[in-house]
Image (cartoon, rainbow, N blue to C red; front, side, top):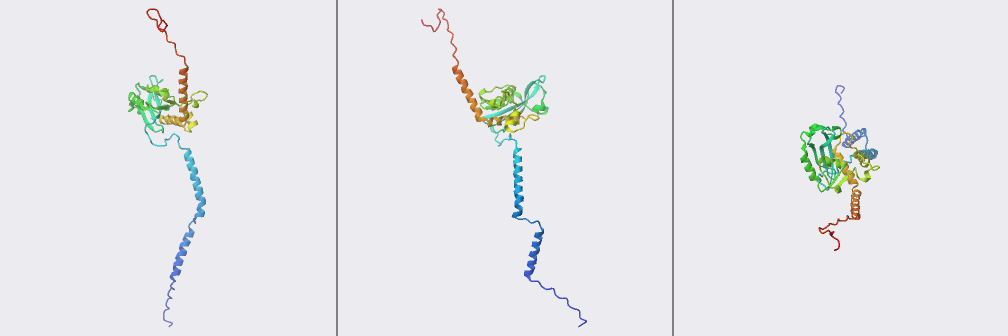
Length: 272
């Protein structure tokens, strides 16, 4: 017996249920080693996260440009706003049309063209106009632009700032009853003096314009938004002014007609 090698004891077979229990315990141990998350621990972070997102959204909303159109409708509306940029001709001291822009009541562009003046340009006035020589190389002829603008504004309310300058550059006129000029509207005046469009835009719209080169699209949008936000009162004042003028005309004494003298010396209209 002493010479016989001892048999190695067979490993005891584990109960299958015990094996499954060990595997479950291992899985749970590995899960425990990970960062523990549940609804209670996530709640504070999620609330803070939502609050931060809300603050970010509010800050981004405050940075939205009020002049940005609310839709993409570029149709021709009953009211249009116009702005022009000028270049220097002659000795540089005379202005000529270099660019004209029209937007509809929502601020969407319906016409925007660079214009080739009839006279040679000697000063592009780039610091203000934003116009460069390359912009006018393929620009449209002045008379073609004038004709198109006249068609677009005909029979419509024309909005703008110091529109007499723009109409003069276009060699056009427009019925006074259909002009809404933000430089002349009484509530916009300060001590009866006209105010710059950039000041009106900053104070009444919270918009910053004309900080460098002028953009006629922005300027036209600013004028239109000023009009739209005051439209009811503005139109009421226009009607009141029209009625007042009608009353004043009626009150004016009629001029006496001159009596015509007939060849026989008797004045016409006299009793015989």
